[in-house]
Image (cartoon, rainbow, N blue to C red):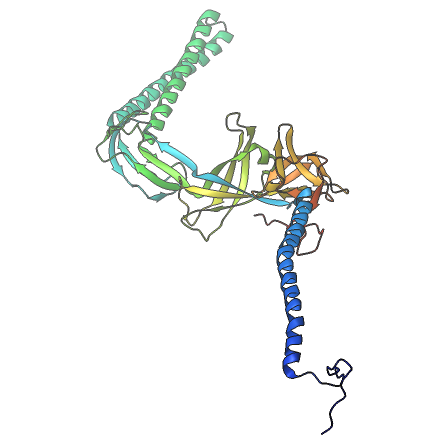
Length: 420
Protein backbone atom coordinates (compact mmCIF):
# COMPACT_ATOMS: atom_id res chain seq x y z
CA UNK A 1 0.00 0.00 0.00
CA UNK A 2 1.53 3.31 -1.10
CA UNK A 3 1.54 6.19 1.34
CA UNK A 4 0.28 9.47 -0.15
CA UNK A 5 2.61 12.37 -0.34
CA UNK A 6 2.21 14.81 2.48
CA UNK A 7 3.08 18.45 2.31
CA UNK A 8 5.86 19.95 4.27
CA UNK A 9 3.62 20.97 7.14
CA UNK A 10 2.83 17.45 7.88
CA UNK A 11 -0.85 17.72 6.88
CA UNK A 12 -2.37 16.10 3.82
CA UNK A 13 -3.14 18.42 0.84
CA UNK A 14 -6.69 18.89 -0.40
CA UNK A 15 -7.58 16.85 -3.38
CA UNK A 16 -9.44 18.46 -6.16
CA UNK A 17 -10.77 15.33 -7.65
CA UNK A 18 -12.81 14.37 -4.66
CA UNK A 19 -16.66 14.16 -5.44
CA UNK A 20 -19.04 15.73 -2.81
CA UNK A 21 -21.11 13.28 -0.98
CA UNK A 22 -24.99 13.28 -0.95
CA UNK A 23 -25.44 15.05 2.38
CA UNK A 24 -23.25 17.89 1.19
CA UNK A 25 -25.42 18.46 -1.88
CA UNK A 26 -28.54 18.54 0.21
CA UNK A 27 -27.04 21.10 2.52
CA UNK A 28 -26.01 23.24 -0.43
CA UNK A 29 -29.53 23.17 -1.99
CA UNK A 30 -31.16 24.10 1.29
CA UNK A 31 -28.83 27.02 1.54
CA UNK A 32 -30.16 28.53 -1.79
CA UNK A 33 -33.84 27.48 -1.54
CA UNK A 34 -34.52 29.39 1.62
CA UNK A 35 -33.58 32.85 0.27
CA UNK A 36 -35.55 32.23 -2.92
CA UNK A 37 -38.61 31.20 -0.95
CA UNK A 38 -38.36 34.21 1.28
CA UNK A 39 -38.07 36.45 -1.77
CA UNK A 40 -41.16 34.84 -3.37
CA UNK A 41 -43.16 35.25 -0.16
CA UNK A 42 -42.13 38.89 0.04
CA UNK A 43 -43.12 39.47 -3.58
CA UNK A 44 -46.47 37.79 -3.03
CA UNK A 45 -47.17 39.89 0.05
CA UNK A 46 -46.19 43.00 -1.85
CA UNK A 47 -48.48 42.07 -4.74
CA UNK A 48 -51.37 41.36 -2.38
CA UNK A 49 -51.03 44.79 -0.84
CA UNK A 50 -50.45 46.82 -4.03
CA UNK A 51 -52.92 45.16 -6.44
CA UNK A 52 -56.12 46.23 -4.61
CA UNK A 53 -54.77 49.73 -4.36
CA UNK A 54 -54.08 49.79 -8.06
CA UNK A 55 -57.56 48.42 -8.82
CA UNK A 56 -59.21 50.93 -6.47
CA UNK A 57 -57.23 53.73 -8.06
CA UNK A 58 -58.29 52.62 -11.55
CA UNK A 59 -61.96 52.34 -10.51
CA UNK A 60 -61.84 55.75 -8.87
CA UNK A 61 -60.38 57.26 -12.00
CA UNK A 62 -63.13 55.72 -14.12
CA UNK A 63 -65.81 56.91 -11.68
CA UNK A 64 -64.46 60.44 -11.70
CA UNK A 65 -64.37 60.42 -15.49
CA UNK A 66 -67.94 59.10 -15.60
CA UNK A 67 -69.23 61.73 -13.16
CA UNK A 68 -67.42 64.59 -14.77
CA UNK A 69 -70.22 64.93 -17.35
CA UNK A 70 -73.91 64.16 -16.89
CA UNK A 71 -74.91 60.95 -18.69
CA UNK A 72 -78.20 61.34 -20.51
CA UNK A 73 -80.47 59.31 -22.77
CA UNK A 74 -81.17 60.92 -26.12
CA UNK A 75 -84.02 60.32 -28.53
CA UNK A 76 -85.16 61.62 -31.89
CA UNK A 77 -88.66 63.15 -32.26
CA UNK A 78 -91.06 61.20 -34.44
CA UNK A 79 -94.04 62.30 -36.51
CA UNK A 80 -97.31 62.34 -34.57
CA UNK A 81 -100.18 60.22 -35.94
CA UNK A 82 -102.65 61.90 -38.25
CA UNK A 83 -105.60 60.29 -36.50
CA UNK A 84 -106.33 60.39 -32.80
CA UNK A 85 -109.15 58.65 -30.97
CA UNK A 86 -110.91 60.85 -28.45
CA UNK A 87 -112.84 58.91 -25.82
CA UNK A 88 -115.66 60.79 -24.08
CA UNK A 89 -118.64 59.83 -21.91
CA UNK A 90 -122.06 60.24 -23.48
CA UNK A 91 -125.69 60.26 -22.41
CA UNK A 92 -128.02 58.19 -24.58
CA UNK A 93 -131.30 60.02 -25.15
CA UNK A 94 -134.37 59.20 -27.27
CA UNK A 95 -134.58 60.90 -30.63
CA UNK A 96 -137.97 62.32 -29.63
CA UNK A 97 -139.47 62.55 -26.17
CA UNK A 98 -142.98 63.81 -25.39
CA UNK A 99 -145.39 64.04 -22.50
CA UNK A 100 -149.02 63.56 -23.55
CA UNK A 101 -151.68 65.66 -21.78
CA UNK A 102 -155.44 65.91 -22.08
CA UNK A 103 -156.76 68.74 -24.26
CA UNK A 104 -160.32 68.24 -23.12
CA UNK A 105 -161.95 67.59 -19.74
CA UNK A 106 -163.77 64.36 -18.94
CA UNK A 107 -163.40 60.82 -17.66
CA UNK A 108 -161.11 58.12 -19.04
CA UNK A 109 -163.46 55.76 -20.80
CA UNK A 110 -160.78 53.32 -21.95
CA UNK A 111 -157.02 53.14 -22.44
CA UNK A 112 -155.32 51.00 -25.08
CA UNK A 113 -151.54 51.24 -24.51
CA UNK A 114 -149.64 50.34 -21.36
CA UNK A 115 -146.01 50.84 -20.39
CA UNK A 116 -143.62 49.25 -22.86
CA UNK A 117 -146.14 49.18 -25.71
CA UNK A 118 -144.82 50.10 -29.15
CA UNK A 119 -147.24 52.41 -30.91
CA UNK A 120 -147.50 54.10 -34.29
CA UNK A 121 -148.10 57.75 -35.03
CA UNK A 122 -151.86 58.54 -34.78
CA UNK A 123 -152.65 55.36 -32.84
CA UNK A 124 -155.33 55.85 -30.17
CA UNK A 125 -153.97 55.60 -26.65
CA UNK A 126 -157.12 56.38 -24.65
CA UNK A 127 -160.74 57.55 -24.98
CA UNK A 128 -162.12 60.42 -22.86
CA UNK A 129 -165.86 60.60 -22.19
CA UNK A 130 -167.03 64.27 -22.41
CA UNK A 131 -170.87 64.49 -22.37
CA UNK A 132 -170.91 68.20 -21.51
CA UNK A 133 -168.65 68.98 -24.46
CA UNK A 134 -170.82 66.94 -26.79
CA UNK A 135 -173.86 68.95 -25.67
CA UNK A 136 -171.99 72.20 -26.22
CA UNK A 137 -171.14 71.11 -29.74
CA UNK A 138 -174.77 70.32 -30.54
CA UNK A 139 -175.84 73.72 -29.20
CA UNK A 140 -173.14 75.47 -31.22
CA UNK A 141 -174.31 73.76 -34.39
CA UNK A 142 -177.89 74.88 -33.70
CA UNK A 143 -176.69 78.44 -33.17
CA UNK A 144 -174.80 78.18 -36.43
CA UNK A 145 -177.97 77.12 -38.25
CA UNK A 146 -179.88 80.07 -36.74
CA UNK A 147 -177.15 82.49 -37.74
CA UNK A 148 -177.11 81.10 -41.24
CA UNK A 149 -180.85 81.50 -41.61
CA UNK A 150 -180.72 85.07 -40.31
CA UNK A 151 -177.95 85.91 -42.75
CA UNK A 152 -179.79 84.37 -45.67
CA UNK A 153 -182.93 86.45 -44.94
CA UNK A 154 -180.95 89.64 -44.34
CA UNK A 155 -178.91 89.15 -47.49
CA UNK A 156 -182.00 88.66 -49.69
CA UNK A 157 -183.67 91.72 -48.09
CA UNK A 158 -180.62 93.84 -48.77
CA UNK A 159 -180.55 92.76 -52.40
CA UNK A 160 -184.25 93.70 -52.86
CA UNK A 161 -183.75 97.08 -51.31
CA UNK A 162 -180.79 97.74 -53.59
CA UNK A 163 -183.00 96.91 -56.55
CA UNK A 164 -185.72 99.29 -55.34
CA UNK A 165 -183.13 101.96 -54.76
CA UNK A 166 -182.37 102.02 -58.46
CA UNK A 167 -185.97 103.08 -59.19
CA UNK A 168 -185.98 105.56 -56.30
CA UNK A 169 -188.65 103.50 -54.54
CA UNK A 170 -186.77 103.61 -51.24
CA UNK A 171 -184.38 106.04 -49.71
CA UNK A 172 -180.63 105.60 -49.74
CA UNK A 173 -180.53 105.47 -45.96
CA UNK A 174 -183.02 102.59 -45.77
CA UNK A 175 -181.09 100.63 -48.41
CA UNK A 176 -177.81 101.15 -46.53
CA UNK A 177 -179.42 99.98 -43.29
CA UNK A 178 -180.54 96.72 -44.91
CA UNK A 179 -177.04 96.19 -46.36
CA UNK A 180 -175.40 96.76 -42.95
CA UNK A 181 -177.85 94.35 -41.31
CA UNK A 182 -176.91 91.70 -43.88
CA UNK A 183 -173.18 92.19 -43.13
CA UNK A 184 -173.85 91.90 -39.38
CA UNK A 185 -175.79 88.69 -39.89
CA UNK A 186 -172.90 87.33 -41.99
CA UNK A 187 -170.44 88.08 -39.19
CA UNK A 188 -172.70 86.35 -36.66
CA UNK A 189 -172.88 83.29 -38.90
CA UNK A 190 -169.08 83.19 -39.25
CA UNK A 191 -168.70 83.48 -35.48
CA UNK A 192 -171.07 80.56 -35.02
CA UNK A 193 -169.06 78.55 -37.55
CA UNK A 194 -165.84 79.28 -35.65
CA UNK A 195 -167.42 78.21 -32.39
CA UNK A 196 -168.57 74.95 -33.95
CA UNK A 197 -165.06 74.34 -35.31
CA UNK A 198 -163.52 75.00 -31.89
CA UNK A 199 -165.86 72.62 -30.12
CA UNK A 200 -165.47 70.01 -32.83
CA UNK A 201 -161.70 70.21 -32.36
CA UNK A 202 -162.10 69.73 -28.63
CA UNK A 203 -164.37 66.77 -29.22
CA UNK A 204 -161.71 65.24 -31.46
CA UNK A 205 -159.38 65.32 -28.44
CA UNK A 206 -161.62 62.77 -26.80
CA UNK A 207 -159.29 60.32 -28.50
CA UNK A 208 -155.74 60.65 -27.15
CA UNK A 209 -153.34 59.64 -29.95
CA UNK A 210 -149.60 59.06 -30.28
CA UNK A 211 -147.74 61.96 -31.92
CA UNK A 212 -145.03 59.71 -33.44
CA UNK A 213 -143.83 56.12 -33.58
CA UNK A 214 -142.38 55.16 -30.25
CA UNK A 215 -142.60 53.28 -26.97
CA UNK A 216 -144.88 54.15 -24.07
CA UNK A 217 -142.66 54.63 -21.03
CA UNK A 218 -145.31 55.83 -18.56
CA UNK A 219 -149.09 55.48 -18.09
CA UNK A 220 -150.52 57.65 -15.35
CA UNK A 221 -154.30 57.17 -15.79
CA UNK A 222 -156.84 54.42 -15.44
CA UNK A 223 -160.47 53.91 -16.40
CA UNK A 224 -162.76 56.37 -14.63
CA UNK A 225 -160.04 58.87 -13.81
CA UNK A 226 -161.08 62.50 -14.20
CA UNK A 227 -158.82 64.53 -16.44
CA UNK A 228 -158.93 68.22 -17.21
CA UNK A 229 -157.72 70.10 -20.22
CA UNK A 230 -154.06 70.89 -19.52
CA UNK A 231 -154.54 70.07 -15.81
CA UNK A 232 -153.83 67.24 -13.47
CA UNK A 233 -155.51 63.90 -14.13
CA UNK A 234 -157.37 61.88 -11.56
CA UNK A 235 -154.22 60.27 -10.14
CA UNK A 236 -152.32 62.61 -7.82
CA UNK A 237 -148.63 63.47 -8.23
CA UNK A 238 -148.65 62.85 -11.99
CA UNK A 239 -148.20 66.46 -13.01
CA UNK A 240 -151.00 66.25 -15.56
CA UNK A 241 -149.19 63.75 -17.80
CA UNK A 242 -151.42 61.00 -19.18
CA UNK A 243 -148.75 59.09 -21.10
CA UNK A 244 -145.05 59.47 -21.80
CA UNK A 245 -143.73 58.35 -25.18
CA UNK A 246 -140.17 58.07 -26.51
CA UNK A 247 -138.88 57.41 -30.00
CA UNK A 248 -136.20 54.74 -29.60
CA UNK A 249 -135.58 53.43 -33.12
CA UNK A 250 -133.05 56.24 -33.44
CA UNK A 251 -131.19 57.73 -30.49
CA UNK A 252 -129.34 60.92 -29.74
CA UNK A 253 -126.09 60.84 -27.76
CA UNK A 254 -124.79 64.12 -26.35
CA UNK A 255 -121.08 64.56 -25.61
CA UNK A 256 -119.08 67.55 -24.41
CA UNK A 257 -115.89 67.90 -26.44
CA UNK A 258 -113.01 69.82 -24.78
CA UNK A 259 -112.13 73.17 -26.31
CA UNK A 260 -108.73 71.96 -27.57
CA UNK A 261 -110.37 69.22 -29.66
CA UNK A 262 -113.53 71.10 -30.67
CA UNK A 263 -112.25 72.20 -34.06
CA UNK A 264 -111.60 68.59 -35.06
CA UNK A 265 -115.22 67.49 -34.58
CA UNK A 266 -117.48 68.24 -37.55
CA UNK A 267 -120.54 66.59 -39.13
CA UNK A 268 -119.19 63.49 -40.83
CA UNK A 269 -116.49 62.74 -38.25
CA UNK A 270 -116.12 58.99 -37.77
CA UNK A 271 -117.57 57.87 -34.47
CA UNK A 272 -118.78 54.71 -32.76
CA UNK A 273 -120.20 53.81 -29.35
CA UNK A 274 -119.34 51.17 -26.78
CA UNK A 275 -121.19 50.15 -23.63
CA UNK A 276 -120.34 48.07 -20.61
CA UNK A 277 -123.26 45.75 -21.32
CA UNK A 278 -121.84 44.85 -24.75
CA UNK A 279 -118.03 45.09 -24.40
CA UNK A 280 -117.29 43.35 -27.70
CA UNK A 281 -119.73 45.35 -29.84
CA UNK A 282 -119.26 48.68 -31.60
CA UNK A 283 -122.35 50.71 -32.45
CA UNK A 284 -121.90 52.75 -35.62
CA UNK A 285 -122.99 56.37 -35.27
CA UNK A 286 -122.70 59.73 -37.01
CA UNK A 287 -121.98 63.25 -35.79
CA UNK A 288 -125.24 65.02 -36.64
CA UNK A 289 -124.69 68.56 -35.38
CA UNK A 290 -122.99 70.67 -32.76
CA UNK A 291 -123.80 73.80 -30.81
CA UNK A 292 -121.07 75.79 -32.65
CA UNK A 293 -120.43 77.55 -29.36
CA UNK A 294 -118.12 76.86 -26.44
CA UNK A 295 -119.81 76.65 -23.06
CA UNK A 296 -118.13 79.40 -20.97
CA UNK A 297 -118.58 77.36 -17.78
CA UNK A 298 -117.15 74.00 -18.83
CA UNK A 299 -115.15 75.20 -21.89
CA UNK A 300 -116.62 72.38 -23.94
CA UNK A 301 -118.56 72.03 -27.19
CA UNK A 302 -121.91 70.21 -27.07
CA UNK A 303 -122.04 67.66 -29.91
CA UNK A 304 -124.97 65.46 -30.91
CA UNK A 305 -124.26 61.96 -32.18
CA UNK A 306 -127.09 59.96 -33.78
CA UNK A 307 -127.14 56.15 -33.69
CA UNK A 308 -129.46 53.69 -35.42
CA UNK A 309 -131.29 51.60 -32.80
CA UNK A 310 -133.93 49.78 -34.79
CA UNK A 311 -133.00 46.52 -33.08
CA UNK A 312 -133.69 48.11 -29.70
CA UNK A 313 -130.35 47.11 -28.18
CA UNK A 314 -129.53 50.47 -26.63
CA UNK A 315 -131.86 51.91 -24.03
CA UNK A 316 -132.56 55.63 -23.59
CA UNK A 317 -130.99 57.11 -20.51
CA UNK A 318 -128.06 54.70 -20.58
CA UNK A 319 -124.37 55.60 -20.30
CA UNK A 320 -122.12 55.04 -23.31
CA UNK A 321 -118.56 55.76 -24.32
CA UNK A 322 -118.19 57.77 -27.52
CA UNK A 323 -115.09 57.16 -29.65
CA UNK A 324 -114.37 60.09 -31.96
CA UNK A 325 -111.71 59.79 -34.69
CA UNK A 326 -110.06 63.20 -34.93
CA UNK A 327 -108.14 63.74 -38.16
CA UNK A 328 -105.22 66.16 -38.53
CA UNK A 329 -104.07 67.19 -42.01
CA UNK A 330 -100.58 68.25 -40.94
CA UNK A 331 -99.41 66.41 -37.81
CA UNK A 332 -96.38 67.79 -35.96
CA UNK A 333 -93.62 66.02 -34.05
CA UNK A 334 -94.20 64.12 -30.85
CA UNK A 335 -92.03 63.36 -27.82
CA UNK A 336 -92.59 61.42 -24.59
CA UNK A 337 -94.09 63.33 -21.69
CA UNK A 338 -90.94 62.45 -19.72
CA UNK A 339 -88.90 64.73 -22.01
CA UNK A 340 -90.77 67.89 -20.99
CA UNK A 341 -89.47 70.46 -18.54
CA UNK A 342 -91.97 72.74 -16.86
CA UNK A 343 -90.21 75.98 -16.10
CA UNK A 344 -91.61 79.33 -14.93
CA UNK A 345 -91.25 80.72 -18.45
CA UNK A 346 -93.19 77.84 -20.03
CA UNK A 347 -92.74 74.30 -21.26
CA UNK A 348 -89.24 73.51 -22.57
CA UNK A 349 -87.25 70.53 -23.83
CA UNK A 350 -83.51 69.92 -23.49
CA UNK A 351 -81.70 69.09 -26.73
CA UNK A 352 -78.07 68.10 -27.32
CA UNK A 353 -76.08 70.32 -29.67
CA UNK A 354 -73.24 69.27 -31.94
CA UNK A 355 -70.71 70.03 -29.19
CA UNK A 356 -72.58 67.81 -26.69
CA UNK A 357 -73.85 70.86 -24.84
CA UNK A 358 -77.39 71.29 -23.65
CA UNK A 359 -79.76 73.76 -25.28
CA UNK A 360 -83.16 74.53 -23.75
CA UNK A 361 -85.91 75.16 -26.31
CA UNK A 362 -89.33 76.59 -25.52
CA UNK A 363 -92.09 74.50 -27.15
CA UNK A 364 -95.85 74.66 -27.63
CA UNK A 365 -97.86 71.57 -26.74
CA UNK A 366 -100.50 70.37 -29.19
CA UNK A 367 -102.46 67.16 -28.88
CA UNK A 368 -102.12 64.95 -25.82
CA UNK A 369 -101.77 61.21 -26.47
CA UNK A 370 -101.28 60.19 -22.85
CA UNK A 371 -97.67 59.01 -22.63
CA UNK A 372 -96.69 61.18 -25.61
CA UNK A 373 -97.57 64.75 -26.59
CA UNK A 374 -97.50 66.59 -29.88
CA UNK A 375 -95.08 69.52 -30.06
CA UNK A 376 -96.74 72.14 -32.23
CA UNK A 377 -93.80 74.58 -32.41
CA UNK A 378 -90.24 74.90 -31.18
CA UNK A 379 -88.75 71.53 -32.17
CA UNK A 380 -87.01 70.22 -35.31
CA UNK A 381 -87.02 66.65 -36.61
CA UNK A 382 -83.20 66.47 -36.37
CA UNK A 383 -82.98 67.53 -32.72
CA UNK A 384 -81.57 65.10 -30.18
CA UNK A 385 -83.95 65.41 -27.25
CA UNK A 386 -82.88 64.41 -23.75
CA UNK A 387 -85.28 61.95 -22.17
CA UNK A 388 -85.92 62.29 -18.42
CA UNK A 389 -83.79 65.39 -17.91
CA UNK A 390 -83.22 66.45 -14.35
CA UNK A 391 -84.76 69.62 -13.02
CA UNK A 392 -81.27 71.02 -12.42
CA UNK A 393 -80.16 70.73 -16.04
CA UNK A 394 -79.16 74.04 -17.56
CA UNK A 395 -78.35 75.45 -20.96
CA UNK A 396 -74.69 75.17 -21.93
CA UNK A 397 -74.01 72.17 -19.71
CA UNK A 398 -71.84 69.45 -21.29
CA UNK A 399 -73.39 65.98 -21.24
CA UNK A 400 -72.44 62.49 -22.31
CA UNK A 401 -74.91 60.42 -24.33
CA UNK A 402 -75.51 56.97 -22.88
CA UNK A 403 -74.61 54.18 -25.31
CA UNK A 404 -77.36 52.08 -26.83
CA UNK A 405 -76.99 48.30 -27.19
CA UNK A 406 -73.34 48.52 -26.21
CA UNK A 407 -72.40 50.94 -29.00
CA UNK A 408 -70.42 53.82 -27.45
CA UNK A 409 -71.79 57.22 -28.19
CA UNK A 410 -74.85 55.90 -30.04
CA UNK A 411 -77.99 58.04 -29.90
CA UNK A 412 -81.15 56.28 -28.89
CA UNK A 413 -84.02 56.76 -31.33
CA UNK A 414 -87.47 57.18 -29.97
CA UNK A 415 -89.74 54.24 -30.49
CA UNK A 416 -92.89 55.30 -32.38
CA UNK A 417 -95.78 55.25 -30.00
CA UNK A 418 -99.00 53.47 -30.80
CA UNK A 419 -102.04 55.67 -30.33
CA UNK A 420 -105.66 54.71 -30.51
